[in-house]
Length: 200
Image 1 (cartoon, helix red, strand yellow):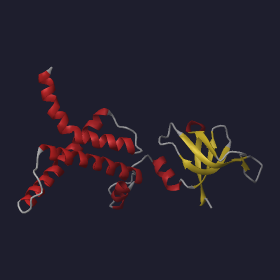
Image 2 (cartoon, helix red, strand yellow):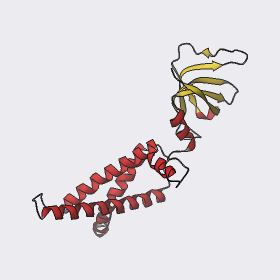
Image 3 (cartoon, rainbow, N blue to C red):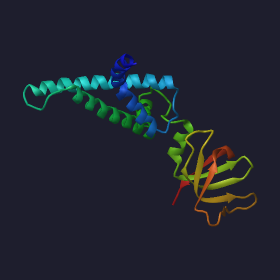
Image 4 (cartoon, helix red, strand yellow):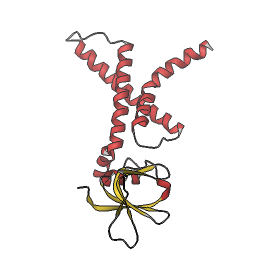
């Protein structure tokens, strides 16, 4: 058992930065988790990138160290840089995914037409502050301002501010008295209609 742990520990230390990056990414990004195999591959790619960055930092530090005394490069120093880069990389990837700037850049150069989030989430982020009409499965219609939306098409909740029922035969929407917000289960919604004018 001791021999296995002695062989396993260096491998875990080597791959820890990549796994830390992916853990941070999946904590903060609004994306569904991929399969375990895919996450391991992603962690290995991140580990390779972080290892290369640490190597570059080490070479620059050694080069600067020939002229100025800045300290000694040790394995602890390398590990600290690796962990710092892992946190930064995971956070940067999550920010890029949540704000769609990575895919926006790729779309600008014609590399893809996709967004970093599912299409429905991307649309809700684009038009989220505008008025919406939720068309329910039971034919009722609810109008209001979309505050929150489900991150997956098949599950989650819509949070609608200033909810009003649109009743057949009535030209004026009927306010739900005493309700500032209303939560609606996404499985009860057939489709979402986005209104042109924003909240005043």
